[in-house]
Amino acid sequence: MATELNWDKGKQMTLSAPSIESSEHGLPAVRTERRLSFRDFLLRYPVFLLAFGPPIFRPHSTYAGFDTSQAHFDIWSIFQVGWLFAISARAIIRLGFAQQVVIPRQIRSVLKYFFFLGLLFTMSVAYSPGRAVSAEFSFIYFLSFICIVEFLVDAHQNPPDWLQCIFRLRLIMTVLLALVLIFLIIKPDLVMSYVEGAGIRLLGGGIASMGILGPVIAIVSGYSFLYSLEPRGRSAFFLLVGMAATFATQARGAEIALLLVLALLVFQWTTKNRRSLHLLLAACMAFILLAGAFAATIGADQIWKKFNRGLDTESFLTASGRTIYWRDVIVYSVSHPQGMGYIAGIRRQHFGIYAGVLQADLNGVGGTDNSYMQALSDAGWLSLGVYLILLGKTLSFGWRFARKKARDIDADERRVWHALRCAILMFLYCLVAQMDGSNFVTPLHQEYYTQNILIMLILGASSEMLFRERFRISLQSSRF
Image 1 (cartoon, rainbow, N blue to C red):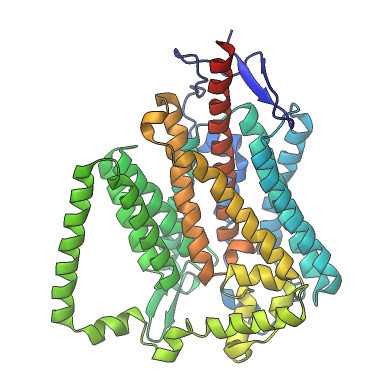
Image 2 (image 1 turned 45 degrees about the horizontal axis):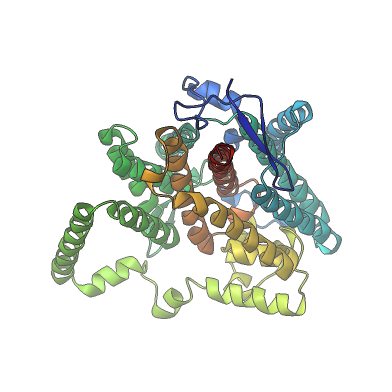
């Protein structure tokens, strides 16, 4: 009979009867269930449905001129909340019937910060200029939290195929990208915009956020290509699709974040052997030579104008005025350390250059164009600190197992290891990209759900590897 390892808060480990089969070496093996179809996967793990958004078939200009710090309802907002409520209601029911489990201390710590951050947002309702909006978003925050907890409890009892979770997330993003392209043909103003100097920007509108679709597709495909997790022709195709989708946004934040993550991925891959490192150095030299030749032909001035979207030097250095806005948020928070009130507070304020004509558009978006500044404005310095700790602890816990060498893990565990490393790369993208967008910390946005799903995958896969590590230790100690 196979053995299962359990551990309690006092770090005492016991061996009890079986739910996970053992490999021929005596180590726990990943369950060898058949690969679920896309439909069956979403039915089995409906939390991934949140990655769809879902799409909202309305332009951002719908709320132009309205005070969005106050409640406004339409059919699409009701559909969004109903979508989340149905998924969370299922999660609550499954939690009620779940067997009692002891989640590892590291994961409990992250979940406590997650919960405490929600409490801070809820407490800010008391001084929010739009209490209805703040209360509604606080409720939505905890519904999302429940979905994450249910998945982790379920994964602790019955681990999923973590690598399949990564590829299913890419498939969801690919489906949404196809939907954006369809609307680009039939109703282009819903998914694209024209900005003087930047040209046409394919942002996705209410259908999907291209700033998260393209990078997720590109990172998963790039990782799969280098580590041969699927046919290389397929992964190369999706890598190009993801990169093209990202650059179509004309958003420097997304472009820079994606290039940084892909560079990190390639660097990690080259550490496997010296031949890979030599190939990387040769490619870098070739790129430098080609870039120099291209700059000499086109002209450095033209390249600079294209990169900074035709902005003047001051606008470029202030990130199109964003740094002025962030400075005003910080100055306000010095004298009001409790913040402005969850979501509604920042929508009521008029800071920096956004006090002008862009305020209506910003109200529609509802953010500070920076998720860290958004957390600061929502519930003050304490909420920003908790948010940073939450992100840091998630990354630290995942990196502890992701940094293991391939030779130090068995073949069964390698799928979990690959899934964890890929999820961390996508999570790193989110950490960088949210410097240029507030939606990563604002519910009902695709970036928010995607980042939460990545946190969920990192915690779950890390827990699986922690389980295996402790299992091996217990077996070794029992032999003496």
